[in-house]
Image 1 (cartoon, helix red, strand yellow):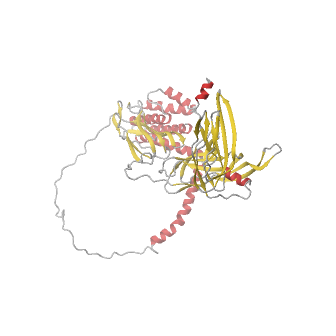
Image 2 (cartoon, rainbow, N blue to C red; image 1 turned 30 degrees about the horizontal axis):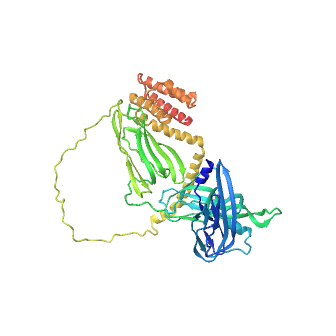
Image 3 (cartoon, rainbow, N blue to C red; image 1 turned 60 degrees about the vertical axis):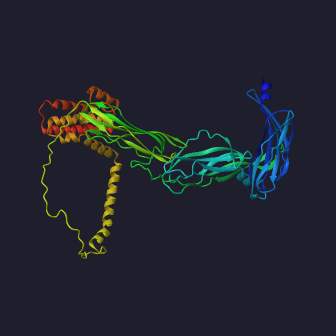
Length: 574
C-alpha cells in the first residue's frame, strides 16, 4: 500500500527563488526541486540576462513523518542580473520514466544598484538588510467611527539570529480611540517581505477608531535589538563565527485619512454609531400594581464602536416614575472593531391605576460596508396597572365664546414713505460698561480662587461628601411626604411609599408585598447594622400605627426627620 501511494503521487518540478526583487548589483538563489525518485536528465533554463555565479549544486533529502514518505531532489544556482527591468527565467525540465516534466516560468524585477558598503560583511549592513520592523494597517481611509487595526511585525531572515528585543518608544495614536489587542505567545510565522522568505512575529496589535477627519499620523515604534550576524570567518571545525551587535530599528510613519460620514440621509436621532447593530427595547412586566416596579431594557448589540455613542432615551408618561438607567457593557476587542452589547435598564414605578403607553424608540447607525444609514424602530409598549388610586380628572376648563370686535385697524395700507431719525449712541470706549468689564476680572478671580479652595476642601472631606450625597437622596425620595405634612393619611402613605421605592431602586427587589421580617433579612444579607435596620422597621411600624391614632403636626415632622435619617444611614452602608 505504501508503494502504491508513493507511485500515485504526481511528479512535479517546483522552482523557488530567494527574492523576486533585487538591485542590479545583488545576487539571488534559484532552486529546482523534483518530488519523485528516478528523475534524470535535468536541463536548466537558458539564464538569459543573468550571469551564473555558482551552480548547479545538487542535493537530495528523504524523510518519514507519521508513516508518510517524502522525497526531494534539488538543483541550485546563484545568479546575478546583467540589466534592469522585468526579467523572465524560462522553465527547466527533467525526465521521469522517459516522460519530461517542466517547471513554471518565473519573473524577476531588477532595480537600480543599491548602496553596498566597501565591506559587505559589515555587521551593521548585514543587520539592516536582514531585519525589518514593519507597521501594517488594515485600512488607510476609514470612516470616522469605523474600526481598523495596526499591526507591528518584526521580520528576521534566516541569515541572522535575534537574542534580545526591547521597545524604546511606543507608538502614539493621537486622534484615535485605541485599545490594544492581546497576543498570546508571540508565535513565529513564515512570510514574505519584498519577495524574500522571512520569519516574523507580531509584536503589537491595536484597534483604532478615528474620532475626527483629516490626516492622522501614527508615529513610529522604535526598538533596540541584539542580533547575531555572521562575521565572515569560521572556527577550526568550519562553523561560522557570529558577532552580537545592538542596533536600533524604527517602523515607518503611517498616515490615516478618515472620511467624514455622509450628510445625505443622515437621521436626526443619529448619535455616532458606526458598524452593524441590532436594537431592542423590552419590558420585564407589563401588568402590575401601583407602587410595583418594572424594568425597561434598552439594548444595542453587534459589531462597531459600541463605547463611543449614546443609547436612545426612553420617554415615559408622568404617571410612571422613572429612575436613572443602569448601564451594562459586554464588549470584546477584535481586529475589525468592538463586538458585544450595551444595555441601559430603567426602573419605572407606576403611581396610579390605568393603562399607559411607552412610545416607540428608534436607533440609527451608519454601516460602513454599504455606506448607508439604517434606522431601527421598536413597537409601542403598554403598562397595565390593575390596582391603585384613580387619577382625578378635572374637566372644568371651558372657553366662553366672544364676538369679534372690529377696531378699524385690522387692515392698514402699506406705508410708502419713511421718516428716519438719527438715534443717539454712546461710545463703548471709556463708558461705564467699559470700566465695569475692565475691572470685573480683578474681582472675579479672587472670588473664583476662594470658591475653588472651598470646593477642594469639601471634596477632600470624604465622609462629609458621602453625608451630603445621602441627604440629597433622602430629600428626593421624601419630597412627596414633605408636601403632605399636616395631612395625616396622605403623609403616612407617602412616607411608607418613599421607603419602599428607595429599597426597590437600591436593592432591585419587590418590597411592597413582603413582610417586615423579610425586609429585615434582606438588609442583614447586605451587611446593614442592626441599629439601622431596627430604625427602618420602627418607621414602617409607626406609619401603620399612626393611621389609626390621633397625631399632631409636631409628631409628623419628627417622624419625617427620623425617616430622612434612616435613609441617610442606609445609603452610607449600601
